[in-house]
Image 1 (cartoon, rainbow, N blue to C red):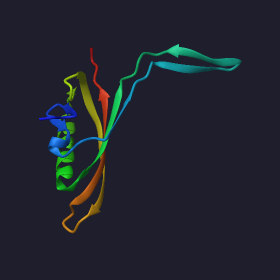
Image 2 (tube, rainbow, N blue to C red):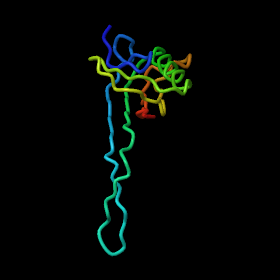
Image 3 (cartoon, rainbow, N blue to C red):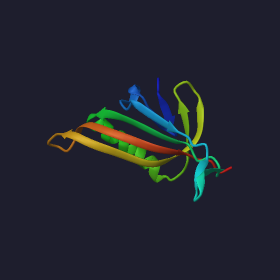
Length: 127
């Protein structure tokens, strides 16, 4: 089965009708600027911050609502999860910081025909 990414037991991909269309990876070099009254700011190294990932997409029908509930159940475990991409690269452990969704085109039984969603992850490093 093809997949874009696996977060713990959760699989992102077309095979589960829950593929993402955007991924933003952010990392910081750990630099901050300290303002100096009489000159330019002084650069200081405070240590590298955790990397973050923002994974977003649009999914349809009740299956999207079910997949988001699965992600929230993983989030409720409050444990770091391994992240592995579709080519087998291990990204290490990540925590689920937030799961957000916007439901639209809702039909009479409350099913959202379209769900726009974003998952925010932070790297988990406790070494």
